[in-house]
Length: 72
Image (cartoon, rainbow, N blue to C red; front, side):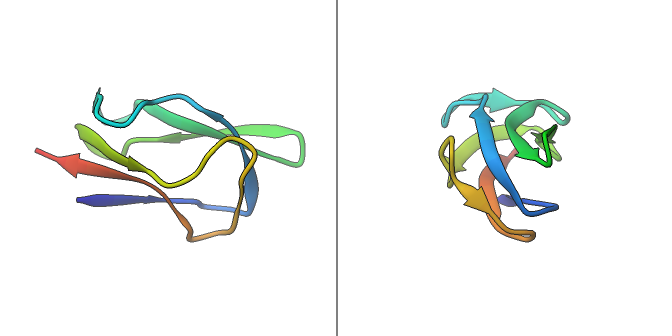
């Protein structure tokens, strides 16, 4: 299991990937919004999206776990 963490304080603008789907390294999982900028959060490795721990509109802080990827 691999935790995907927020790199900055932001708001979850859009959740792109669904739990249970296969993801490749670099695939968008969700998009954060901070200071009117959209910041994509991508899968660091390939695998299956096991958990999405945030929802659209949530506020996140730097270091928060946003999603969990089960690596193969």
